[in-house]
Structure formats: C-alpha cells, structure tokens
Image (spheres, rainbow, N blue to C red):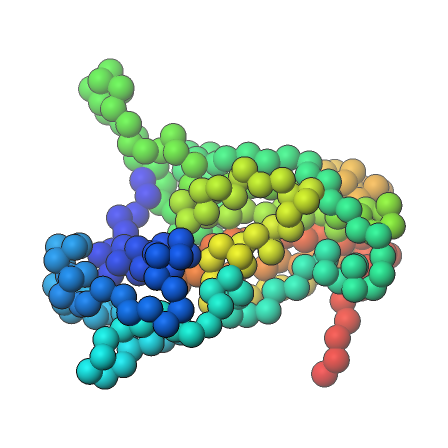
Length: 254
C-alpha cells in the first residue's frame, strides 16, 4: 500500500503543479495562507510549513507584509547540473543516436525490494476475499514507477546502456515520450525542478543483458554510474548507466 501523502506535501505538490502548468508564473503572487488553509481543510500552521519548505528550496519567495511569490527563476531548469551522454558526445562532435530497448509501467506489486526502498514505496496490501469478490480496488494495479532501457551510440558503436526508473505519479506522461528523440534527463529537467542528487561509480562485470546491449563479452569490465535525483524531498528518478570499460572514461578538472 502506498503511503498516505502528508497534508503539507499535498499543498507543496499542488503549488508546484500550478507553477509547472503556467498558472502561477515567476513573480506572481500565490494564494494566501488563509485561502490555502480553507482550500485544503488544514490549519495555517500546516500551510506555513509547506510554504517555508518551498521557500528554502528556492521555489517561492516570501515578502514580509506583501505575501508569497513565485521566485524569479526559470523552473524548466534544474537546481543542480545534470549532464547527459547526448550532450557530451555532441559537444565532442561525435555522431549520436539513441535506441529504446524497452518501456514499461511498474505497479507496487511488481516492485523488487531494492526499488521499493529506493523510492520509499510500501508493500501493497492484500485484499480480503470479500473485497476481491466485490472487485474492490486497492490502487495497487496503478503504475507507481516507469522503467525505460536505452542504448546510446557514438559513431554507430554502443557506448552506454541506460536503465532508468521514474516516479509515475509525479510524471504521468513520461512513458509516452519517444526517447529515441527526447533525452530522458532533458525531459525530467523540463518538467520538474531537481533539488539535489547523488551518484556512485563502480566497476562491475557485465551481466547478459548489458553485454548484449553494449556488444561486449559477458562478464567484461564495465563502469557503472548510478544516480538518483530528488524533487520535493523525494527521489524522482534513479538511473544506472553502464559503459563498456575499454570505450569510455570519466574525466574532469580539480
């Protein structure tokens, strides 16, 4: 069963939806605390918490004696820099292409324990026989995550295999995109501001699926970058990017 969303988080989500849809644009005043309290049937203290957190996240700007306003910044850009392989290859003047291997919706019942913990999703509840006979729904047949797998090519050679999982509730149209044309990271950044992220890089032997995608021998060395990014305090997307060890390296300046 998916956790009940706290009242303050519902208010935050509603405010973000109004901003992303363009109803409230940069510089616009949003509804007053009293109006939001009445709309959501909560105390002004609960509303105040939502507004305080969004102000700390630089989404809103609170002005003493004037009200609360949408911060003057572009919300189609992330608060953290997230580079993607398409940018890197194009900037290096290499021919780039993406091939979508698979896309699917994942319900709570389908989740493995690793993804359940990663996205903080509860184990689905079991319907009683009475509920099942009445065809009652516990919402566990609705997608909670979307999964896409994509091969990225440089000059015709597979260089990265991307496995990505995305919060289906926050991004319901994600699965409809053509990711051979639209880059997954670019789409996420355009739809929801990313507050922060974390990543790890590991050397792993390629399992069958990865080896087949990268056209390398099974158990060949790979570099795997795992990254998760957050929005509204929760993981929005988790991605594993597998790279053929002999074809790719990570570099930068210190």
